[in-house]
Length: 263
Length: 293
Image 1 (cartoon, chains in turn brown, red):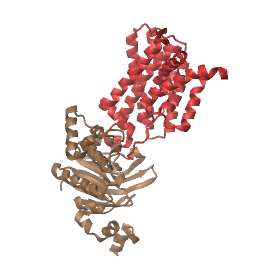
Image 2 (cartoon, helix red, strand yellow):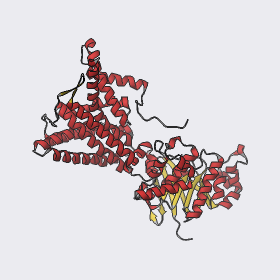
Image 3 (cartoon, one colour):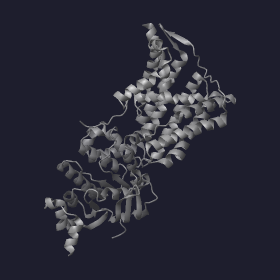
Image 4 (cartoon, chains in turn red, green):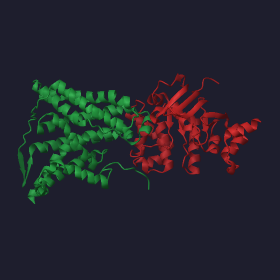
């Protein structure tokens, strides 16, 4: 395989210089790939994405080691705005639409890192409405008054306004109805196929994510516990135990399962 | 009755002057959550700079433009050298920084322009004009018009330009704003520059009213009850809050003053603000959270 679009090498991160969030995370996303980042609450999924997009400093976090390369460029000296302009957009956890801005204003704000004219901007907004027709009907509504699904669409549309080559999403299906969650992944898959958009998606819903992703990484306690093609990861008994809850009364730590398998 | 209307109109018009000062606070508070105590010092600095330039025989328009440029530059410098290094600090740290800043600005004004009191004549006569039975000072009327124009311009800027959109986005959700690639420092620099412009307008009008002197920076204290009433993050609130405080002050002076030996103007605004804090802490127009029912 040629040089991956994104490579994360041994990245460690802390919050407030005290709380260890990532110890040594390494992962890659190739051009045209969908990669899933799985793991329980607190495993480090969000921190990993923030470390990649240099958002850590905005939330009292620091990268303590390792490095990130996007499209052949080291990212540690780039600000979040420069990264977005370089083609790396992120849909942050919990959607975070601008609540008092209308849906359309939210989308326009997504193009902030680009220098494009008004006509081009209007065309790009129309493109997003093409993806999500129901947003067009809500274009004048404050985003806070839209449904959860519509807010997620707005957040994704806003990120796509930056014309990314790699789209990172942090739990895009959180709090959404199963049908809407599936629609979102279906849309991501189509976008990946039709426009060759690379996608890195952090998700708790492992079953759903593994169905659409090419590869997956499982995070645990701030480091990668398992990596592989989605089909392989899906078939692992330990993953089934851990995520699909075959033994809900005995939820075990993933690492203890691995060590059991080893002995 | 006509006497009451007279009092009320006088109060509303003097309230406009409070609104002008409060407006500068709102611009910065909305975008960065910083309560800029130095706004009063900026008002003083602007007025003093303008007066000193005109006293050096510069024409009115030139003085105005130069002062405008200086205020924009000052705002930008404050953002760059005071607030940017303090990013992610607690709001009390930022507040203390602006408190210190207000002394630095006052000191700098003193060094540059000296300490004597200057008269400022904007060429607007302060003579009463008769509207039916109500007499209104021409100066107050012009001040109100200028304030209205400025609010209209700001509203237009926020609603129709992309920079204005960036402003509102940053005010709404900072993390999301960073994530979509907005540069907070740019937005903040513009907010401070705009606050500088507002300070200039307020400084000229207040300076013409009271004379340009160091007590001018204490108008900041009158802006606080205005902000409590109107809400710290609302432009409309700054205007309405200012009008209310002005009207309350003047009516209290006339109708309550005689019973308590006068001098209500000094404290009534703060008492009203205190009462307001108990009932409606976000202020009349303060942004409450917008959620789907």
